[in-house]
Image 1 (spheres, rainbow, N blue to C red):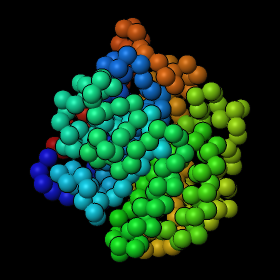
Image 2: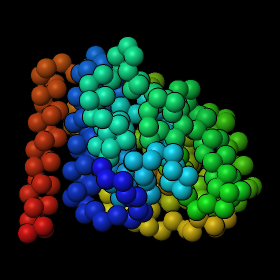
Image 3: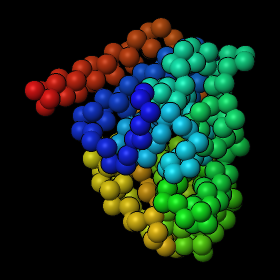
Image 4: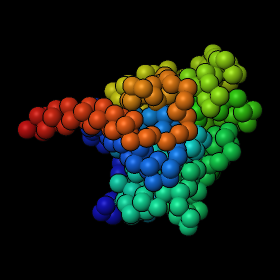
Length: 296
C-alpha cells in the first residue's frame, strides 16, 4: 500500500462491496481453521458493514495507523475481529503473513483485538459494552483538538444489555457529538439465543431517539443502503450523534448458518466447510463477472 490517504466516499460499486463482504466470510472460515474454533456468524452478520466502512467510507492512512486525522472505528463486539484482521492486512496495516499465526502463542492477533499489538485497531475489546464510552471520549477529543475525524462504534444487539452503553448514549447526546456514529449490528441473536427471548432490546430505534440521537434503520446486508446511510451523515461539526440500526441476520451468507442457534462459536468439519465455501465462492463468481463487464 503506497503512502497515501484513503479518503472518505471512495469509488466502489455495489458488486465490488458485495464481493468484498463474501471475501471477508471466506477469510473468516480460513482463520477459524487456523485457530480450531471461532466466531463465524458474528462476522457474517456484519461483513457488508465491514466492507463498506473499510473499502469506501473511512478516511484512513494504513501507512500511518496513528495519523491524528484518521476516522476511528471501534469494535464493541470484539469477537468479530477475526473478520476485520484480513481487511487490515489487505489494506497494508500489517503483513498478510500475520494471519497465519492467528490465535497462536505469541501472535499479535487474538480472538479479541488488542490496540497495543495490532496496527489499525483504535481500541481494544474483550469485555462487551465499553467501546461506545471510549468512542464518546474520542469524539470529545476531536472537539477539543478541532479535528474533523469521525468516530464509528459498532455494537452487537445483545451488547445493548450492558448498562454502560446507555450511559455513553446519554453522554454523547449531552455533549452534542455529531461526529459520533453508533452502528448496531441487529443480527437478532446473542450467544444464548434470540435477543427478544433472552433480554429484549426492542424498540431499539425508539430508545436511541429518546436518548437524543438521530436514528436510521437500514437493511444491513444491502451495501447500497449502507452507503446511502454513510453519505447522509451530518457534518462532523454538527450537534446530534447518529445511530444506524443495521437490520442483519446472524450467519447471513451461508444458508445452514443463517439464524442458526448452533454457530455462535464453533468449527466447521470438512464437509460443512466445503459446502460453505462453495456457496460463497459461487456467489462471488457472479459479482466478479459483473465487475469485469462494468469495467469493460
